[in-house]
Image 1 (cartoon, rainbow, N blue to C red):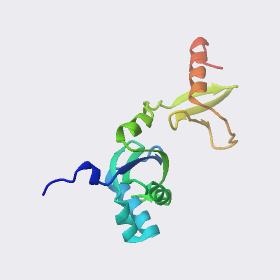
Image 2 (tube, rainbow, N blue to C red; image 1 turned 90 degrees about the horizontal axis):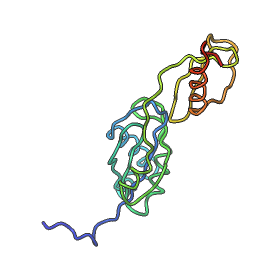
Image 3 (cartoon, rainbow, N blue to C red; image 1 turned 45 degrees about the horizontal axis):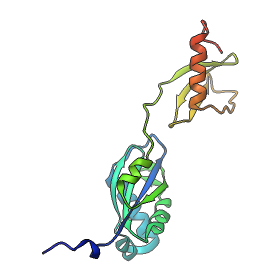
Length: 172
């Protein structure tokens, strides 16, 4: 049988999703089953069949899911209902919609190597700094009492490291 000419084929759209939490790593099959279950529970099996969803890329904490043109909102709505994949609590956040996979790959940020744990002293108090995502850094105070909120970013971490390198005793 001859393939359909391009004018008779269904148009496709690709939606880029960010998987949260960042440390959760899934393969495409697991993401597919979770999203398909959400679609079938919201729209039924016939609605899932009309969508013709497929996971075309799943790496790190990003997934690209294909659907028919015009049904992007249905896919995004169903994907927002996903609250666990393979017994791990997580969420799918839509980032961008496009007609090509290449355009979505340009939207994905480069994943930098995580910074290892570092000991940081700020205002005479000792903390352990752990990078949680591309720009967020968690500070854990030594001990479990007297928790306090600190707003710390990667830029602050670099400033702290540079200042520690300039000071002979490593204090800031």
